[in-house]
Length: 153
Image (cartoon, rainbow, N blue to C red):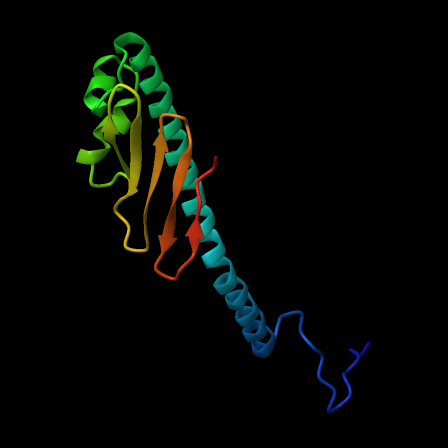
């Protein structure tokens, strides 16, 4: 029995992709990634600002407890750490070059205080977040390209 031969001039298409199809797919994927990267970076920075905001709320709570004990607010993080009211990571942030935010108490007396978190170790983002004795959080973090991240209230 003789094998069926294909007619001359007719090519059977293989199951693979052509080079053109692969190039078009790669261009589409590159465009999608290019659009997604800035959104991802802003989301990461928003998460970091929210963590800083949560740490400032911890400082606020620690200051309230300190005030109940001493009838004045603590003037340094060392006072709060000595009473074991704050985590070591918050206290040691000033000495850690890899810390995302550096925390500190900028003003404190018997009736008020202001604590802050300054954005650290980034060439792309800068700014400061603050909290006062009433628990009000303020401040913004701004990127080089002008994007603004505000901390969670």
